[in-house]
Length: 523
Image (cartoon, rainbow, N blue to C red; front, side):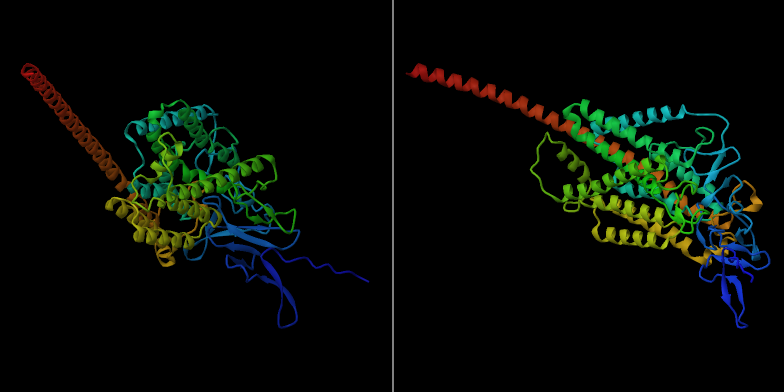
């Protein structure tokens, strides 16, 4: 008697029966992201993909999009760039950037740490915890300044420029899976967007061995600070200034909303990926695959906070919809009426509810960008629907505000359409994925034609926004001066009328007195 043990096929291969009644391990046909190298039994991956196997538990393998710049690729045929899954690499680290390892290449190694703003691993020699109190002081100062200005001049972020704000704060996430050579160009947009979100406008290392989970927790610092300042300010501010103050609060919400939604949703992005402990895989955090979702108290706590915040933000959208479509009996001392007045500012009558559509648009778009990374088709449909709806409704009172909004949305669609057109990507770049070529070592990919092509389009709204914002400030200043002049003229006219009325009244009283005296003498 003898026993025969059949070893399983390598991950990415499956047992197939051929015509000569012989079984042989052959490359799997079910996964289009994988091609097999029969000589070494290794797997070639489509650029931008990460592969994980549960071998030796079984031969199951799964591919998932690799977070931008986490993975590395090697030169393939026709100067293409392909990822390589090595059968001898039980921890799947050879497909990672040299400063990373683990599932989805999520963990920083070699003494590097995650920066406060970007997800790249960087050298951290000194602790810079003092930056956290500085950002708190900065948030307090900006919040108080916006609320002070709004209380004096009723300042609200103009609807005509909200489309540009929406573009600046979300286009970084929409282009996250553009080619790796596009990374540097995108960072400038991230820096500017982060500054608008009242967070750090540059990337640095907070302390050695800082993790992605800790940096995600740090991003709640700015919204929490602004919330505390708003609550305290509403308690101490004079009642006569409350009406205009809510315009400033709405401006702060517009600035913080996209980054807060993205951070919360990113904490909940947990795909099921294979590991060496179970054949069914486990839920892993996309930003750092070494973190098991809800596997320890730190991620569980942040996930619960994220769920609560997203619930509040979703309820906020529903609340402002109800407030803007329902007629209420106004009470001059009611906070709710001040909120409604701020929400309805600059919208046409019967279209004040459109602000809830704008918040919902950002919420849905960011959700698809987070939970379906690397896919541009659905975001394109969302933006096309938003542009069409805006063109049909034209909700703003000023025509130029509606025109700017549609132009920005159309520009947004154009960027994603160009990224989705495979012919353009293939023509302009030999490495259209997000992995870093191994020839670059620890550096990012060199800019190519595609990067130069997209960069000019990416920054065009931002460049155009600067003179438009300046023109808006000048326009508001001119209007304010005119209103002051008109008010002064009106005041002078009223004073002159009051003076002439007083003189006429004195004259009338004088003649009435004389008349009464004459009547008395006649009697």
